[in-house]
Every structure is written in C-alpha cells, then in structure tokens.
Amino acid sequence: MSYRPKTKLGILGGGQLGRMMIQETINIDVDVHVLDPDPDAPCRDISHSFTNGSFKDYDTVLAFGKDMDVVTIEIEHVNVDALEELEKQGVKVYPQPNVIRLIQDKGAQKEFYAQHGIPTSDYRLIGENEAENHADFFPVFQKLRKGGYDGKGVQSLKSSKDLSKAFSEPSVLEKAVDLEKELSVIVARNASGEVKTFPTVELEFNPVANLVEFLFSPANVSDEVEKTSQEIAKTIAEKLEIVGLLAVELFLDKAGNVLVNEIAPRPHNSGHQSIEGNYTSQFMQHVRAILNISLGNTEIIKPSVMVNLLGEDGFSGEAQYEGLEDVLALKGVNVHLYGKRLTKPFRKMGHVTIIADTLDEAKSTALAVKEKLRVIS
Image 1: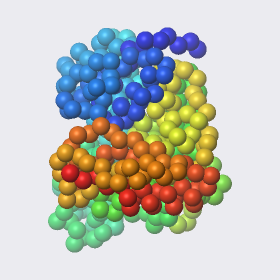
Image 2: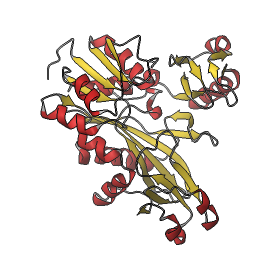
Image 3: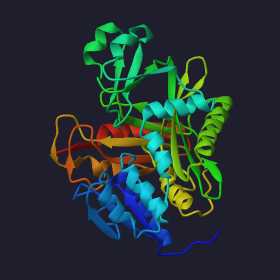
Image 4: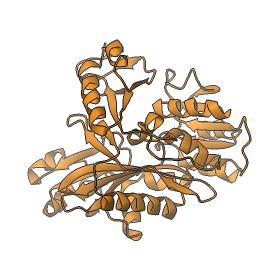
C-alpha cells in the first residue's frame, strides 16, 4: 500500500461526524471538501471547501463529487443514484453505493441478516396501513423502512390498543426482545480486505429522546458474549464487502443471545470514546479504510465513559454551556463541542469522554459531568 498526500476527499454531510473526521485528516494532509444543506453546518469553517446544497439531490451530488478522488458519507440518507454514476465515472465511492442502498431500507437489512444466517429478532415486513393485520405478532417495535434516524421513525406497539399511533408507511415489525443490555461493535474493512473491530461497548439510552446518553468501554459482558459480538460484526462487514466503517448495534437478551439491531455505514455515536480511549479513533479508522491504508490498532488505552451532551428540554435558541468550566477541571475529562450555534431539546450538541484507570472511576466522573454540564439558551 502507498498513500498520496493531498487526496481530495468529499464528504456528503457536514455535521459533527464530518467535523471529527476532518480533525483526524489534518494529521495526514488530506484535502476535505464538504456538501451539506445547512449553511451553518459544523464542518463549514474547517473544511478545505464547503458547498451549501442538498446531498439528496442527484445533480448536486454529481457536480460535487466528479472532481474528488474519494467520496464518503457521514449520513446514509443521500442520493445513491448519483453515487452510482460517480462510481461509473471512476470516482471511488466508499462505502459503496449498493451498501448504502441496502442500509437505507431497514426491511432490506433484515432480509440480509436472514439470508446470511446472522442472528436478529423475529420480524415481519408490512406495507401501507397493514399494522392492524399483524396484532397477533405484538408486542413489537415498528420501524419505518426508510427515513428513520436517531430514534425517529421507531415506536412501540404493545397491543392492538396502540394501533391508533401506528405508522401508515411500509415498515418492519420487530418482535420485542427481553433485553438485558444494548451493545455496539465498530468494525472497519479496507479495499484490500483487511478487517478490524473495536472492543464491544455498552450503551444506556435516554428514555425520552431514545438517544444514547452514556457509553461504557469496555462493555461489562462475558468473554463468550464479547467473542460472539466481534464475530457477528466481522461477518457482516465481510458479507457486505464494505469499504469503510460499520457500526453494528446489538441486543443482548436475558437468555444470553446476541442479536443484531441495526447497522450504520459510517462513524457512529457509539464510537466517540475511541478518540481518547483507544489507540486509533473510529474517525481515523474510517479514513484509513476508505484511503486503503493499513488499519490502526483498536485496543483500549484506558477504560472510558462517553456522555452525550444533548440540548436541555425546554430550551431553544443560541446555545450556552452551563457548568463547562467546572467540568473541564475534572480529572480525565475531554469535552467535544460540535460547533452548533443553535440548541433545541435533545439536539446532539457535543459529547464528553472520561478516561480513568477503572471503569467505575470513569462512571463516577461521568455522573458528575451529567449533573454539572447543561446546554441551555
């Protein structure tokens, strides 16, 4: 393998994931160009060039990508037809358009798991206004096949009494899991076929926003669960033949079974702790993979906890960070603000990673961070 500096990398999406990717590319001299519909996107002022436009529009994506060496994504809801055309024109598009197209459809994801013998919860695919025909399958989680993101497009249907809130669009009905823990494994594969995983992490969700609130690295699971989780992630990456990073979200049920929940073909909220907690961050690993550089060491340096910094409920407007100085004074605390000018309830405004000699110590500091640091307006 050889690497050529000043590679022109185009990113569809200019949010916090792109921002943290750019922060890593600076060290290896990559020119990063960003397309995003938000004129105030977090990547705007730190990218080599910024194009304000829709990554869902065919012509816009085609015009943006035609002069790039490599095009990647930080959000999967992009125009795949344009990416396929760029690929035909000789632009390297990673993850590949066919992978993005599959992952855009949660029903196609489920069928992929079934086809390849990958464990997942029981499910049914339904068309428009068909939920009422499947009340015998309840309790379930109904997920829109397309367009869902960050907990949106998902709802619980426990019995036929909940049918009034059922989505009318084509959906997946997933049998509810008797849940013990939610886990995640980040896996990377480069164009040469090298595959590496990060150690499994454990997630705790905000019950109101359905967003990750805490992440614990490493996960408190048995060696068997760790091994199974790693094998599942590698299998999915290899079966997809993906080039780039893949986040594999998992359920651990009370019987000890590990089941795939969803996958995301990009850096992911469940890998943010890797910036300080692992020898290679998920963002650098994604860049290595799509540029076909040897993948980095994913081992844990120290136990860590990541706290998502969400906009406080009841506040909208110019963001203010209450308690920031107090938090920065705490041992092992690393604050990442995403450069978003405006806050609103449960908007992802940043994250904090705490590293310590033990996970219990990191958890204790994380609770202090959660109590002290608030995003208000």
